[in-house]
Length: 451
Length: 180
Ligand code: FES
Ligand SMILES: [Fe+2]
Image 1 (cartoon, helix red, strand yellow):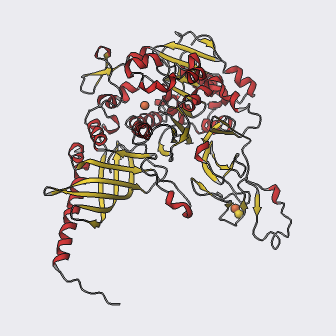
Image 2 (tube, protein in one colour):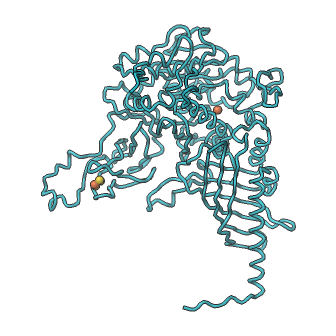
Image 3 (cartoon, helix red, strand yellow):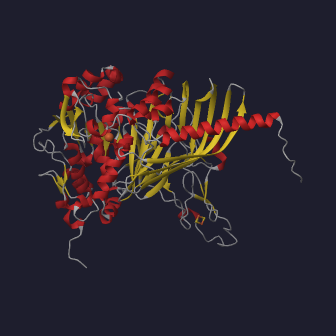
């Protein structure tokens, strides 16, 4: 036995807001992971699927909730319920398909049968073997504690004391989802991409806010014109190739104008300010925002977001009407799930163009994302080296230089590219791990006036 | 039951020649990919080519017809020739880090069947194993089947359509930065 204190007793040292340093152990420690499952994924409102993925009675979709898998099921009365995919008899999964339509769920072990509402409705040998002594009403599939939808996005929590979904999302989280919902009459595109990266889930989350990496990580996507090429006078050196040559790092005008929002419970938004993005990308991608009712709904600040909203702990909204779920499976394995949306009232051509860009940017074959995974996998791997993990993880960019403005329920900063949102996420992560009351958690994640 | 010995009629000889041409074409194509000659590989596609890899989902037997997504739905690849050229160009930039250092790939193509031949185009089905190793010890394997439509052009063949059906639902690899 060693007398090294458990990482859990050292939460304060693991995330240092004053210096912008993290302890790398948080990316591979099993004890931390188990605590995350319990204190974060066991309590938070988690995204499950979209309303339009399960339109008809009996439609279901299997979704991850922390270390568990739940079946999200459309009921006879049109409502939605979710319950654990585990038989109340002896645990077998009652459903083996990832999605589909059923009349009921019959467990293939001994045949216990559950209705769409999760109630136990059939037990083989109920009178002969159980002598009618089994009270069926006592053994339904175990339900989630709360389930609710916000503008078609279905969320659930295992914590019955969790605040209502809208309150949990707050202005920041709601804005993230509004940025999809306001595009039109949005429906899910059939098919959820799912793939597996050998990384800790937190690398996949903090990368959502990272507008420092595209110019290097995704340099090849810039080169072939997937991302609009920056004007020549914004090319700046700094990186050198392994032959010693200067790489022309394509900084964009927007890099000086980022808009960062930090919100209660750990939600955040980071990335370019829309007005500055329109200068390089043109107004076309944002045309949908310029309708008066959309402008009103997004608000004067919400309409400036052209970066990435993220709903704590693992739900990322892209600028392309997609939503990505980072699914932790173990300390060093994370599944990435992509949900894509389109406006069912848009023309065929518009819908095709939208799908075309969704397929080509993200996902395992996406020309952006195929570059990301190895960075995260290698970063995770190095946190296992006894010496390597002693090197602090740095999130120092912009530290202490940004004023927070609080208006319309949002707390935001205008700054060049920075690492505020990442550090904010880790700050919230640490507070979640301490397992405070909801009230305490909210208080500890109220943004300060400066970061 | 007796099995009749095949008699080498002219039509079976012709069929064997076509089978041989098709197989040689697919092997040539695989060799181009394994030597990272992506631009040469893309040149094997016609200008109107469609290259498509759907998503696959575990569905019950009753709903197995919904197992794969279709064009117009989400996919891993849904490419016209221009997109294939863009992907090839991206590998050639020298900054496509997911392939630098380059992965080592081996495309094994088997079970080649010509299921239709109208004299102009051929429908060809095949199975594949794509084995990829990367860095010190990353290993990815993709097994699946392909449905190709090949067109006779000049003295050779060109790919008009390739649909790729993987035998995985949740992909076990961190990316698909390769071609099938
Ligand atoms: S485990 Fe489900 S019926 Fe026995
Ligand atoms: Fe990226």
